[in-house]
Length: 276
Image 1 (spheres, rainbow, N blue to C red):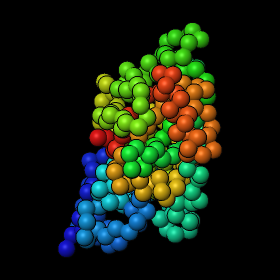
Image 2 (tube, one colour):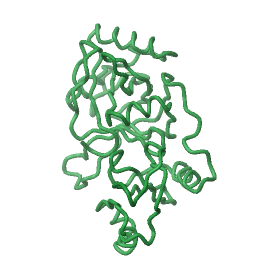
Image 3 (cartoon, rainbow, N blue to C red):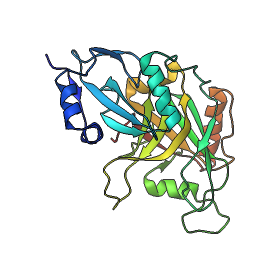
Image 4 (cartoon, rainbow, N blue to C red):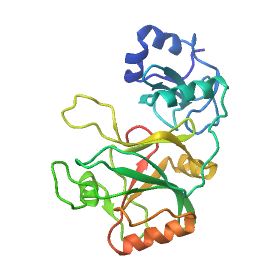
């Protein structure tokens, strides 16, 4: 019986038709595996399984995930992350590493929306809406973000996001609306990137990183469970100095509500990994 594998065109293009067919016919496919997204067991003979190819500067490693978690895709990572994936898959490293505190910000290098260098601080936490906890990411730059081509001192972070489809938040207790084409990449049990649609005219169908972790960020089991349960992450964003580094989720919620009251908070709901 052939395994229930999904091999995307992007993965096939990287590994070649011969290797893709060997996977699809079961010659090189595992029977059981640990999902590279949710870290729970999977079985290629019992459930749809995605092939996920991590590509570093010199290393490429093929991993497997529940198709309900993430679609088959190619994920470009740093060489260090690719080597880490090899160690995790071969069992020479502890899967998932040590989870970080749920509401502790982890700054990372970010793409530059404008000519000034920007670093985005990223906080992973949970927000309570009604009786349900939802996985959330809060993004706040360390300084003003300039519009491309602008040399002025202004901060265009919120206008740029609103132009992309983020919506202003007036009430944190309401769910943000979905943002088509954007997604949150959770792989190997860690947060890797926030992805946006490819640039028009680029000729590529693959999403690109709007924010990418310099080193993949560990998340708590509770955060990962909440994200996997709904297959959705709420992404909030505010200008520099609006949220701050909050050590607890209740304080993070207070900061979000204060930013919303001042009219400086935007948000969007994004699916886990791949495009919506």
